[in-house]
Length: 422
Image (cartoon, rainbow, N blue to C red; front, side, top):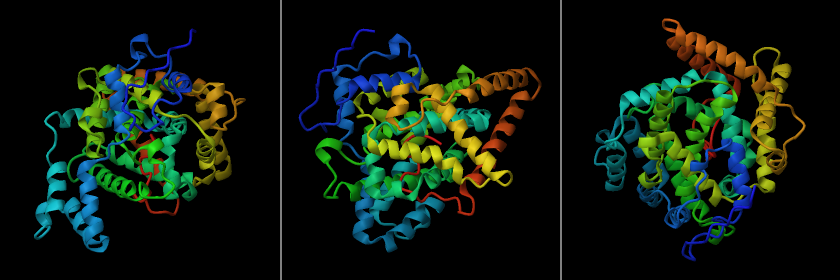
């Protein structure tokens, strides 16, 4: 394959220097994560698109950033209860609500005109159809493979989240994913909506705090939790999730895939991703995949911290609280994850993350024929699709107590949906 030309730097000097610094590796990683992309989805960004991605590294989330400034100025002991009251009961429940609080809730309560509740519910059901195998594939293709984006990892390091362990991060992220992909979960007072707003607030607090740290290299990194990195995360949960289903043989219809993308477009909007960073709904999955490819070209690839995160995630199953045959199931889950990693990453990518290259891709060889048989047979039977949804959701719910153990499920960690999936 002939070498591809390096993209010309069309951005202003103020664009963070991480932008596009590792494109040769990024192209290889993109192919590994996203499979053999059709040629039309491997088009390089135009100069305007490239500049837009670079400028996204300098953009935060203005509505929540204004709210956070007010909360810090007022004092969290006073401001946070008012925020929680407005989130749980509506802004009208807060007597004499301060204007910054009113402004933020006016923003999140004004749903975009393009949101379609029926499509979101269909997207949630499609996520349920994927079952536990769908979640397993997302954990590897989204979170583990996503740790290659070394600049995105810097926020974890700056906040000390890395030291808190992979087990809690996976549990928190899985709980959040479960909430936002529940039917009705993204309604205004649904658990998914409320927890996404809490995550958005945490991101705003992190952005405010981390950019002031003396060792935060803004010239290289840009803003913490910036628009370009948030876009990468949202595509990890949506476009990469759909690609990951092939890894385990879960067949989804074109309509289901489109509905999943519609759901995640709204989740991303609620989480503070700007409208100009969202995919085109007219060609949802292709648009998102193409935009993710452009985003990955901007990202610096794996470093030593990426290896620490990936190895920690590889060992995460060894801390799960299985009720029976605990040790056997822990080790089986670890090797299952590594077999999925082997199936979707090449040797260079695995080595860059400090993961073994000798592991055989045995689990997809089991999962693909099994899931193809179960799903395609069920869809031919009366109410078979409904059975797939109930079965898949029950599998997903059953993993939560295993991940949390004796800890209470809650959105507490800075990296709750970071980076990518669970």
